[in-house]
Amino acid sequence: MSFIIDIDKDIDQLRKSKAGIPLLINGTIYSARDAAHKRLKELIEKGEPLPIDLKNRILYYMGPTPAKEGNVIGSCGPTSSYRMDDFFEMTLELGIAASIGKGSRAPFVKELIKKYKSPYLITIGGAGAYLAKCVVSSRVIAFEDLGAEAITELVVKEFPVIVGIDFRGNQIFT
Amino acid sequence: MRELSVQIIKQTIADLILKAQHFLPDDIKSAIIQAIHDEPNQSAKEILRILLENADISEKKVFPLCQDTGMVFVYLEIGQEIYFTRGLLKDAIYSGVELGYKEGYLRKSIVADPIKRVNTKNNLPPIIFTDIVAGDRIKITVVPKGFGAENQSGLKMMTPSATKEDIINFIVNGVIASGSKGCPPAIIGVGIGGSFDYSANISKRALLLPINECNSDPFYADMEKEILTRINESDIGPMGVGGKTTALGVRIITYPTHIAGLPVAYNYCCHSLRHASIEL
Image (cartoon, rainbow over all chains, first blue to last red; front, side, top):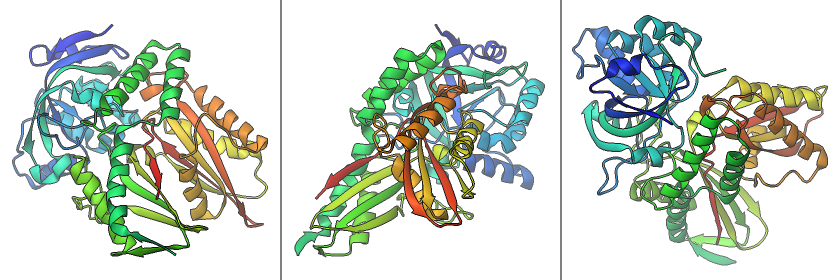
């Protein structure tokens, strides 16, 4: 049995959810994976403005297949989160409310999650076709030249996640 | 000699890629169904159930099984009595890969240089392995493989004094150390023997063996079983939520090796083990 959370209205409820709890999320999330993180870091280091505001946003580590005609997106399951670990504090400083991906992360990630109260959620790797059915709309909002690695804004409905590491640092991973 | 136009190969490669991307092999499906039945952990059970539903959705050919539509590995067994006409075989394979990824709306995931990292935008190049065999037929197998799983693979140049137990420990410890990063439940292909590179080659080929069968040598069949059992005692479970379904199958291929060596490689594959073959 999963709780439904409307993230556009109640991000605090999501922030406080405990590890192991299954949730269905409704609302807006942003996708970003390896290349987009690297690009954000380069812009920050150069002191240039960022094309998007990540404050209170949820980052989904994902790069989709192209959408076929009549569909808003292609397959869109999570990628392995640990590759974003070295960029994680940067995104927390930009204000992200949570991250979504798959798999366990480096030990220091847990401490950052506690510090910033920004839980790590997992969804189902290899269920890209199933998850595509939970996406209502999708549009590229930054770094279009990165193709599948561009940052997109996704509106999701009943998108299944499990709290992997909660705001207290408790985690489901052994 | 039998003449064969490489133009047929091009379309065949594209078709095989699409088939692999949309149809989960029956042995994997059956293993997931069995795991749903056997799995006591409710979160794990639910994830496995969604993976089956994912396979059903994918069969309608709109959404591929996974968004990581992979790098393409092509295995050719070419009968030495074939004479290829109307172009180069390699060009036809490349064109077939490009066509498949374009027409199938598959994600282009290849960068032209491993450090400079600019996407080739057509999923080229593939990696091709060729075997020359008897006869006038060609068997083509395509394996689009995602790299979340590929990254969790391992290789060790063990020494001839290593025991069966040492080899099992190397593989089991490696798979458990990778936790949920490689998208478990996994299938583990193991290559023992050959050389540094050939052990890795046969570990990938081992992934193509049916997981509902076992090695014909009882010694290695027993090893397959023990590795699987020990991985599944780890309580990693599907996506790391816990449970007894961390791997669905383990298969081993061996090859003769040098008196001084004992190479061991394991290739980690996620549950979305995609492959398709045809003989022309």
